[in-house]
Amino acid sequence: MLLCHYRPLKAVRLGEKPLIGVSETIWSRAVCAVFGVRLAVRGAIGPGPHLVVANHISWIDITVMRSVARMGFVSKAEIDEWPVIGYLARVGETVFHHRGSHDSASGVADVMAKRLREGGNVAIFPEGGILPGSGVKRFHGRMFAAAIDTSTPVQPVMLRYMRGGEHVNDVTFIRGEHFVGNLFRLLRQKSCVADVAVLTPIDPTGKQRRPLAAEAEQAVRTAFDAVPMDA
Image 1: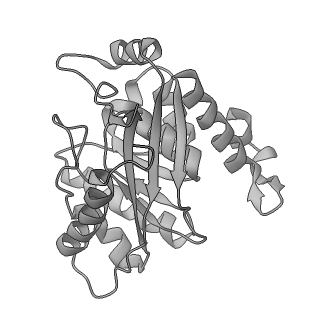
Image 2 (image 1 turned 135 degrees about the horizontal axis):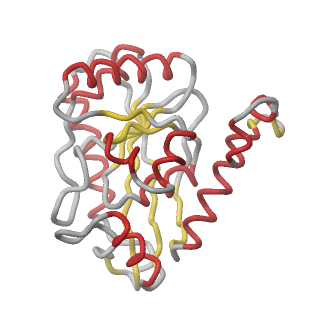
């Protein structure tokens, strides 16, 4: 996969899809398999740029979502320092955001808008991080501005991890756990299903950031709380 990010392979296409996108999808699905995560995907992200917004449970959410479609993420700057994952995030064109920094937030918004105008998908976790507790948390509206400014559809995506028809809560970080510890714990745990629902896109035309974020949040929350199809 890494070689596909360099010339001349970066320009190669397989039919209508770039080789780099196909390789990222294959790589992401392989990583999910290594961690015992099977994919169950409903719906698909349509053509053209989208601001993809999803609830956030685990660092492996990024790999799961890249198994569905090619997209660049906005992630906290700390991920850039994580072993292996940090490097993969960089070559995957992740935009790193320094929390609490106005200059960083402004720069991230500019990059997001530029990528959307160029036709790429940009993904965010608008809950603001992996927060304690189960269920969908409040979606913050700040980064929805890029969709409004570029008239790009907002694509809600619901993520949940299931085992035997029940929600799996042990894929997230436990109190005091660092990334490496979590990684090895996930390698040892029983396999689970990543239930992914690509929901109806939202037109941002004429909407403000907060109401737009609330609409996306409600769509994701409703899908998350729905009875699993295999229950």
